[in-house]
Image (cartoon, rainbow, N blue to C red):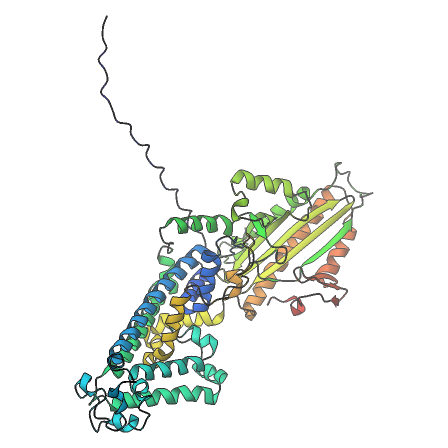
Length: 591
């Protein structure tokens, strides 16, 4: 019998860990002008930065609304970077404050006010701090003349610069309006004269007088006392100035128009939580499945622009060529509308720069929100199933819309027209919902361009004065990194996957320029005209009369029948308005 040699023992090998999933692809709108200004806004506006982080990170159970012409991931990455810088600066300021108090107030711990050391301070001021500082508060100094008449019990607290500086700081802090307090650490925001007018004359003058008195006293005692009353405030001012310098450099080097388009988009921190958050936002912000809240179903699209709807009774044509049999369905109407709208991409001239060349057409399905964010399957097969089932469904909860989008002015002015067709019995129901999303606030653009052009010369203004209000701002940032309690609206509601706010709409301007208004009107009228042509073609090809349809369209387009606001419920008929919520834009012009 032959004995087979035994195989050498091999220790079991652990299965190799699964490689990390590939990151989502870079957004096509990561370098748009709207994205650039939103990224600058999170550096220049602490309130907006806190809102971005609160909505996307602290409330990661919420679904994000559609991102029209911008990349939310890039904006969040800049917001997290700006918050990290703010927290580091706040920690440095708090450390300087602690050192200031420990250094200047050390005699209070060695000699409490109740001891005999201070009991004779009012009678012979030559003692006091002299033994500790080495005649820093020597006999006959300016500080003796200023503080020697105070009570011997109050003198220990009022005779040191740490407490005086803290009192002046608190006075300066509470004299500022809330919006100025929030931006005290980041830098000036808007017109300083406007801020002073908002505060009021006396309220603005008191902290200025207190600051002048403090610096006068600190400089007057500089020769015969320890320089802590000047040194530590200057350290605080230098920290505030350095923080603003870093902000200015970021805006100038990374967020200037040319630099922003050349550089790759900033990514989120490489940690499991942020990787999951990146994947969720990337999957939702451009998805064909839109999770909506019934209170605001078109969140993120902007302001409604004369939505209109009508129901038309279908009648067979009695004359003309014989049409094929069958009933008119929503799918049949959309199949005629799609090619006509798509033809708008074809420019009349090769050199045309018309924004309609980049017109986007998407099939959207609106789904009601569920208890958790992951309830909505976003696999391609599931998305296709929802679209196929919802086209002719006509339900209330799940709704299909054909969305036509134009990103004008480098995605600053976003125009969308959403079309829903429904046939029931012998009726054709047509719903057309145009929206206009205005440009990013003008002051963000102006401040970004000013910093990019002038750099730190504009941004470092008066850091020594600003240090008075930057200290409390830094403390607030450390205590509430995401903002003060209640800063994020509806934060106390039950957690649900519903979208609450559009971060793009938060900073959208309520007005547009005349050029932007003309472009918006032209694009919307062109798209609506193609939609009407497509419905007319569908009626003709299916053998239905079109005369009644054309009459109804004329009434609608000339202002006869309109839904003034889908979300507000205002209905206008024959020029009159039954108001139930939101007033539609006057004259149908975009706002």
